[in-house]
Every structure is written in structure tokens, then in C-alpha cells.
Image (tube, rainbow, N blue to C red):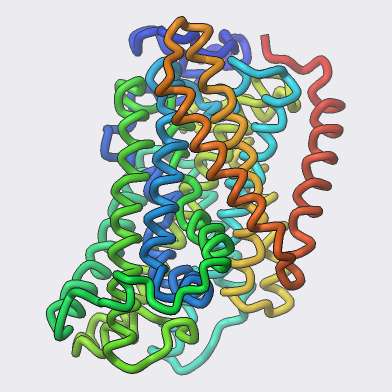
Length: 470
């Protein structure tokens, strides 16, 4: 009988350890290749969601500066990635950003980081079920002429993703890699034909940002940042990735850069394509299908819808995978009951934690789907709530990064400048999400997040007392 993983050492990996002595915590070590590790981060971002849902919303605010807003978003996330990288190249565990904060900040702020991440991953998983449901209904309507009740595809997305996440981390990573690759390839094909069919690739109104209302760039940046959140989720695979001290830092920084370039180009091409066709991008619910039709690629419309649906599903799966590992590690550090820190003896996955995160996810999106809330609204509302979790967790890690460098006698002016710039970007995004006051229900979401943090910190403290796995 395999030794219970609660009898194993539960302290985080010491900074500077090599991959030969990283603790698996009962999870399947050396299971994921560098590409599969990066697939975790890319799937959490869900790059198809940007062109499919978010870019039209950003255009409604930023207009011809949409591509520039995504450039600023890319720059912001690269700055955050550089701070995360300082930890990822020295420490690997399932704890993700929570472990980084715990190794540097006080226990209270470490707990805030962990609980913020849980909301971030579960909220994003719940949000993208809205996109999954919307695009599944597009396909069902094309084939059968009917629309499914929203609760049915929502339950399918969470249920199937939960089964895969419990079953096999390798299966999860490979599935995410293929689903995202196919989706992105289809979008690149449509974008390429759109550019070839345009009279010019130099769109002067965009390049000069003509008629842009610059006060609206801030709210547009907040929406653009939501397109990126989750890029750091490969850090939750520290116990399962091969050579994690190399593959994870590369996955974090590489995914931010690659997806950022993809978003900037997609934003530019979508605005150009809709202007050339004399259509309004901000009013389009299926911009990719419209571009496919204008490019005389009618056959690609259903494939793009299928690709978008699979991308949203991959994001749900990726967020359940990452969120469960954060919860798993938090339990092993004593913030929750020790049962959530046990790995499945056969599958070597944090099965109990997966089920808890999946339940939390469904409790957020299930009731909204049951009362018929539109998928775009589910994505917008819960995605915004999740973004608060990401911003708080990112900000605390950015604060911790120079402290970490100082303790290791590596602090330099470059570290301070990068951390300061990243902090300014995150605080700016947080400020623009609060003022000017957004319409309901968005105006209430910051208070919902604050109430969530208060409750889980109190409950976690009560449940975690005396349950530290030793």
C-alpha cells in the first residue's frame, strides 16, 4: 500500500533547490512535457475568447485604439510575468502564486493570495461556461434548428472537465494543447484571408488612433486584461512538470508574449475587417463568423464556432486543474481540512480538491444558467469577479518579488523598476474598474469579492486550525 501523502513533507520547496529533489506531494511527477506545461497557461487564457467575445467589447470603449489597448495589456502582463518568473525559476510546487507569497509575505497576505487565486480560477472556469454554452447553441441551432436550455451545456462543461481533471493530468494537458491549437489555427486562417482581401494592410484610422476617446482607454484596458488572466497557471504544475524550474518560467513568460501578440494582431484585423465591410464591430456577437463569411470562407463558420466552444471548454478544464492544485497546497499548509490535501492513490491527482473547486464553479454559473441568463452576461459578470482575484494575487506577488530578491542578495534596480511598473499597471486597472462607476451589476462586484474574501478567511482559519498536514 502506498504511503499516505499526508505523511510526506509538506513544506514548500526551498528556494534554490534543483529538480532532482522536488517534492511531488503525492502527485504524478515528471508527467508533463514543456509544451504540455505551456498548454496549461495558454488554455487558462483561452486565446479564442478574445477575438470571439472580448475584442468587440473593448472596441466599444477604445475604438481605433483597440489594438493599442491590447498592446498595453500585453506589456502589463509581461511585467507581471517577469516578477512571477523570479520565483518560478527557484521554486516549484502545486501552490502556484500562493506558495510564492507564503515564502515571502506574512501568513495573512499569503492566505489572501491563495483565496484570491481560488476565486480567480473558479470564477474564470464558471465565466467561460457562458461562452461554451453560447457557441454550443450556435452549432446545435445550425444543425437542428433548436436552442438548448443554458443549464444543460453548463452542466456538461463542468461535469466533463471535472472527470478529466480527476482522471489524468497528462490527458488534461494534451487535450488542452490540441483544442487550443486547432482554435487558434482557424482564427489565424480567417485573419490572413481578411488581410489579403483588404485593399491595404495599413489602416490609417487605427494607426493614428483617430477619434479615440482617451478617457475610455482605462475601462478598455480592464477588459483587455481579463483576456490575459490565467497566464501564470503553469506555476500550479510544479510537482508534475518535467524540469519545472526551467519549463514553468518559460511557459509563464512565453504564454504572455505569444498570446499578447495574437491578441494585438487579432484586434487590428477585426477592426480593419469590419470597417472594410461597412459593419459595426461593437454590435457583433459572432465577429469571427462574420469575417469568415466576408472572406468567402463560409465553410469555416461552423468550424470556428466549434473551435471557440472547445477553447472555452479547455479554459474550464485548465482553471479547474490550476485551482485544485492551489487548494490542495493550501490544505497541506493548514488553511483547510487535511482531506483536501490528499492525492488520489491511483490517478495521482488532487481529486478531493478538484471536486471542491468544481462545486464552487458550478455554484456560481449553474444558478445563472438555470434562470436563462445569456452566456455573454455570464462570461462578463463572473469574468469580472474573477479578474479582481487575479489582480489582487498578481499585485501581492509583484510586491513580494523584490523582497524575495533582496533576501537572496539579488535585488537590483531593474527588479525594483519592473516591480514598480507592474504594480502601477495593476493598480491602474483596479482603479479604472471602480471609477467611473460601471453599470449594475458590475458596480456591485467589488463588494461581492470583498465579502467573499472576508468569509473565506474566517472560515478557512476556523477549518484549518489544527489540521496542518505534518
